[in-house]
Image (cartoon, rainbow, N blue to C red):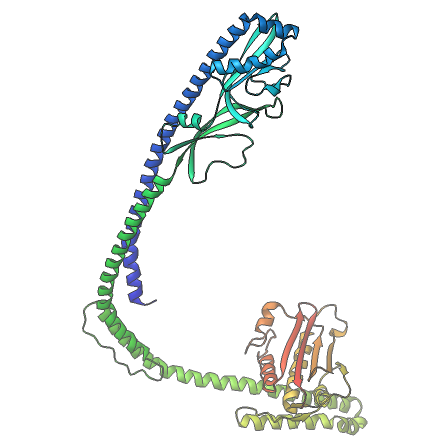
Length: 546
């Protein structure tokens, strides 16, 4: 991110963050106050609705009390229900009384709760009617010939000829009834029954509700549940206010952002131009080009930075000369370590042969000529190996000469100077395209590392075993060198092929690094399978000669 971009972003944050906090605070306070006002209005309406329902219940109770007096004084009705006579009169009694009392629901029940007369539906005669207890208002869902309807009911009791009777009456709870309860056009009153699956409209905010006993008597006496009268208000006004605030707030933010960007652009131009010139000069600095001049007479921080860069360039000029000298010394040291490592690999077979000859000369002098003749091939092979190394290092880098090479023959030559090693060489291997000297160096390095890994391993009979095997794969010949040594951890394996990394006392840390480079130069691949305490297996794959 450029300095100009950072400056623009900083100005934007400084200007916009306070504006955002201020705007969001106003929006939140406005919403809180409007919501509180709605809650007060709805709380007042709930109180009014509760009083209206109580008033309607008292009116129904007064009409039932008048009806109870008329029933007590009506000898014909009393004689009909006690003696079971004049059934038509009894069935029609509740209907006539309901219309005269101005009710929409009326039932007369006997002591067992059976309907003696029903004003809203004659066919309910002798059915078990609903039980409304408590004497207060309740909601009742009743059946009529046209379909079920909801009523606000209350009940009363009386005795005729010593027998108990109950009178239940009420008025219909319909849209007109709910409209009478609603005093505010922005508020809504709805009845939510227990059987209603869906609640109020999700766009409306539920503020408060009151509950009443409820009985569904359409298919029988039903049981007492709880119904809710829910008072809600629409969020349209609040949403409109928020939209207006958001519009003006967005306009203010855009204007403030534009002003901030213009001011920041002007300031960044005055500051970033000299910095850009300074950055262009700094970009021209290179280890091979340290003649860039930094000079400034400005008294501010940019001038101080320019003079500081000039002093740093002077120090770089002096340090570059010392660095080039150190690089030459390091390069010669690396070359010397690699030469030492390769010469030691070539001298190891010679050392073993001469130790063997000394032992034979001391113990069996007569066998010395025969033993020398047997080991002469190893001596000549090792001397030839060292001569080839010398010729290659004379060119500073060993140049591979790829030709058809017998992998098994190279492995046997590498084994001639080694100790006791198990072999499993496949017969009839095709020749590979590689330098025989390179493959021998690879094999000797891997065999030497495998033998070194066996030293000091407890519980290994005879110090453990090293196995070299060859086999043919898909388009390749595979050489594998495995041991039962200590193996490598994940961390050690990750660094095993790094230059100068070693876990052996006195090691150079170049063996596996050289092996990997030689294998890659031969268009081959090198894989490692290892586990701590169980040994390692190095697999070299060389392409078959096509």
